[in-house]
Image 1: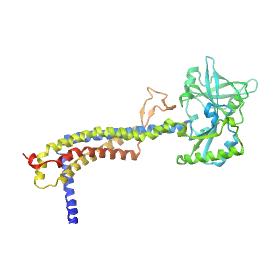
Image 2: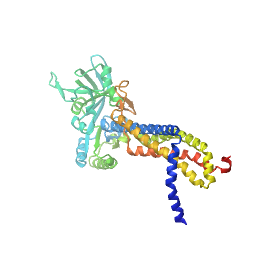
Image 3: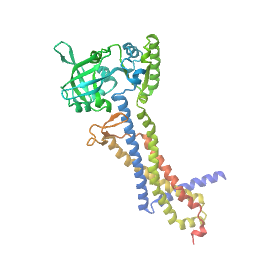
Image 4: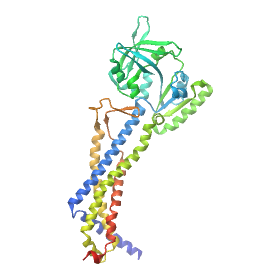
Length: 438
């Protein structure tokens, strides 16, 4: 008996599927409007997921490739109050580089000073880098707006001392009315307590990288920094780039272990504190938090959009059931099981959602391809980009759609629409043939 029942079910399913497909086109205008509403909602979800993913990827790229790098090492005193004396010896750099041949490393030094031009003076943040090493770790030196990036020696003074080139931030150049080729005087308190001052040549102006550096940043070579600050026994920051981001945490842990061993052999002064190793997520918690929330944003916003679009499905199926109440009563009167009637209405809803998913996916992919290639250009109103969470982003927002996001969007739309169709489907079970046939 069980085998006969299963055979009966399998033989009736193709008929129900065929009838359900024909039923959705009995009123083509209403069905097309329902499909359009659902497909439009799906397109909006696809584009939202694509733009959000593109924005988060851009944030990760700016947080790692432009200036921050994947991992940074500082002394605790430098993290707390930017103590200029909280340096790590140069031997640390050499030994870490020897033990980790698969990573790229660059040292950096910082100081505060006063910059003066012909017209004005202002406080600046001095950042010293090794150009060759920095290029291998970040793309900071590639973001030049005006001039030619050169951190070498510009010329020699009358006393025989070298005069170095430096690079400044875009907003700082605008505020001081300085262009490439102009001279700039830097005055600061050197590490030995003396007043450090020197004349420099502005070689280039950088594009906006981060708000603080854009307003106050002065970039120079480590050699020029050592001549100005008389600080030659170490560096403040170690920026590290890893080849495989999946190994980020394991490499970070290995560097911590290596630094502990180095500290036990060559102990650092207690005032500067121990070396602290932080990855880009710890350095930019706002970006990391947004990455964690981005998927939840897509689900919540997508659910709202699809739910609103599913109201069209609910209305369509309610009207279809209402118009065919007499027909359903006849089917029940001649012996059709209520579960088959329920299944037929569910199949109608399924076909509407399936067609909507196909149409919405095709249109969404076509529009998304344009956004991935051209993006949304805000350069007219924001030529220098926009800043968020302490970082400057390009004025062109491009999308990036992951296949899994497309699959989740289609699945969510079909599930929500099928749930919405349960209300009209349930009404078919409650029909009484004697009443509806009057």
